[in-house]
Image (cartoon, rainbow, N blue to C red; front, top):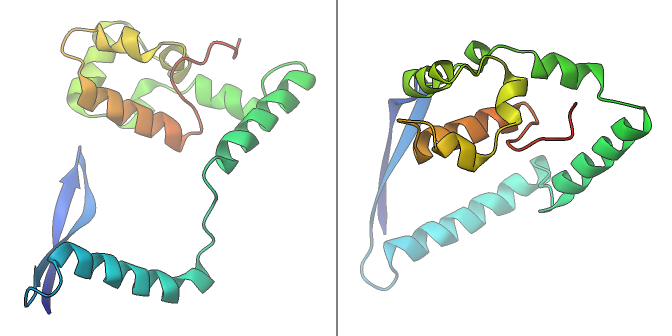
Length: 152
């Protein structure tokens, strides 16, 4: 088995501070390149596990639900959420296409955006699945999602 790797600078949207890892794997035929990568990943994970705490799938959802229940018990949304909702769309640093589509439809704040559903966004002219993925990712980074109707 022989492996060659290299990294290259790459761009995601308008951000240019990402790296791309390129792996070339040659085998003698006793194992496929894919299986060699799987085994290598298992070994790497074994050594990294003591330093990394993996969250169980679903824990984040449970935490978010309990947070929203606490917020309702307090009688409204918290100040941090309110600050996120009044942020301008420009602060999300979206690609030009996504930004232009939202601007053309007079969506100016994050609060206006999160009240929309995926279906509503996809009806916007020139707004496609790539733009939708980008917006979902940006909102997720803020702890928000599309279709939030209980934030008033």
